[in-house]
Image 1 (tube, rainbow, N blue to C red):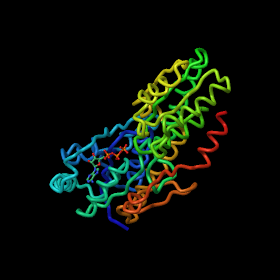
Image 2: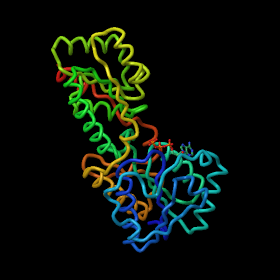
Image 3: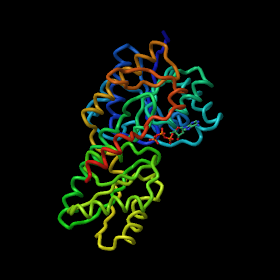
Image 4: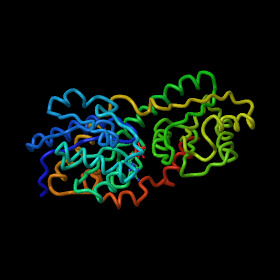
Length: 327
Ligand code: ATP
């Protein structure tokens, strides 16, 4: 057991739908146990600035359905320095905060890992990022909602693409992870998917498109993850157009709309379970761990292990299925 009297909660890195549901769960779990809770605005930057909010159970009313994060988020370079982390520690201590819940991605976890080794404030992390790229959880908060947003967009693009017999390139988020692209591509019936994990040459893509053209398809959609090797949707579209002039090509970059919106039921339930579990583990003595979903169980994984392993492994079976189903 760890004698925590006041829990500090913050969100950091990119925002993701479900962060608010997680804040709500963590705040109420701590209050239920008779502990005080402080919200820290703008992630690590808020620790350095002493930007704190004393929270009660009404502070998190009516937020379970909201996208974004009521605690705001930020990237903070000062926290990467020892001096910055010392300042953060001094402010947390002065506010009486003796345990932390961090909601964010791998950068946030790295900051938490370094900070909790240097200072005597334990940290439990919750995976919150639309990329679904964290080892230690089958799913991260926001991924399900973001993928559904992408599918909704693909469906709409399909309507107009089919009406004009067009070829669309739809760029989705994923600098290093193709998880959204692969799953949204399969669920949206895409003809081809370009992923950061797999180098697909333009010639190879053209072969796939040739097959689609021969199959008399009325529309063709190629999902392009932003981090794929050819340089993004505009570049790929230009290269394809240069080879297949008969195609009427269009590009749509989905961009930041993938981050927003009301979290899906899956993300709300996952957020509630992870927020609840994170606080319970913190009170039970956990430090430098993340909570995550394994099958249908919530488990902890040491941050060091989580950060040292790659999460999303491209499934060759899924890729083969994709080729078969898109004939
Ligand atoms: P996303 O996956 O959505 O990008 P993230 O948590 O990975 O989220 P980052 O911007 O990579 O987002 O990291 C968030 C913050 O964590 C950084 O702005 C910085 O303050 C802190 N951080 C990242 N790496 C380190 C590090 N090596 N040492 C200390 N702090 C770090």
